[in-house]
Length: 496
Image 1 (cartoon, rainbow, N blue to C red):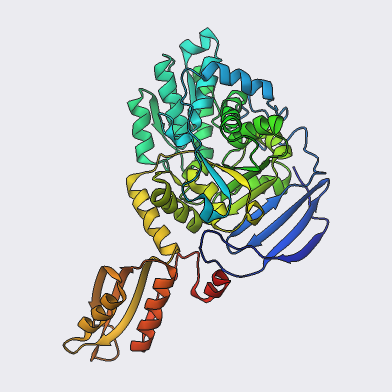
Image 2: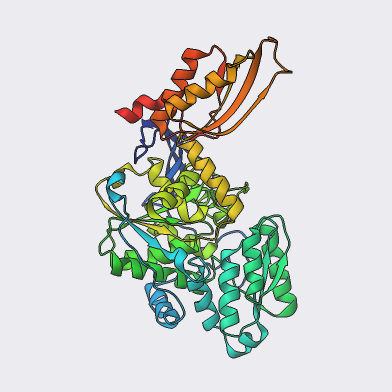
């Protein structure tokens, strides 16, 4: 659904990052597009994008299916909204099988300029919030369906939750996981006695296969983000947040298929209407913000992302109609900020979370939410299932984005002592060399050698000191700025 643009208004706005992180001091373009009754405000800058729904937005009562296999519980012709009653019912049923996770004040709350709380739902047994909806959906099955079993498609967290609780409740579970799903999550599902099928290049293909198998084998397909029972189960997080942090000014929620934000927003807006609901997506998979601009779910091409748990190509119909009226802002952040958020959570909070779980903090670090300064804010850390190898890459990328891991090439004299002099400079500056190599063959001057160095600095200011010192000593020195979220020329903004 959705029509063409009837008008565009452009104005300028500035966003600054928080917690001492430097960011491009560009002005962001604010574009207001009108799609019939829908009017969305879109702000774009180098750190990402913000989409704000219009209060006058009219949500369609039905959507076009576009040839997709129809799930009777997620029918585009008859989307279902969940209610506060659905969430309280779920809370009662699942309370004996789900962890009530803590929501402590951040240890570095003051450095963010806000009263920041972290809802640690990655501490569930399988490492993510998905257990809540999965258990409620399984407990709501008929006796006959419990014997036949259920099936679902998932990138990992929903598959793990469904597999684990199906095992505990003695209900057969089959999960179809795309080839992009993390190896660790695939193995965990097998450990929980599920029938695991790895097929499809993305969630769309995996879901198509799962729906086909459900029809052929009479299994119930449980959509991991759009089934009403799944959304109601996830909404129990909202109830816990309000009990643990009364009257928060804002709750920041990672968004993939939309079920999580739909459930939490329904719970929080019913009990605390003034609390702002802010969703966060990765720029590599902005399916919900695209749906907001389109005024309906629309297929979004997905790229490889650190936030693999959010990589859903099309948001749920039920989730969209439930969440859209309750969302105050949707933030799209770049991957560098997610990597930096993962690093900050490890160093400052001693929390190991996956990319999806860190995306809420990433929005704060990127300076996309300046209006929350001095406010009471809850960030949901929704998942902690991250591959060890990916985790290592995330930490390195986070260090690079913050200017603490620096790579440069420099040409030094090939006479005795040339490389020694370079190492002396680095040593005097207190820089730690992580990797070093040199080559001679591809240089025009046979009396010089190119040295490639990867080194670690204390912070951004230290890396800047290193750059200035090397440029004073050498005429040919080049620094790698990619994949940095921060650029040297913008340092002055951060000092203001």
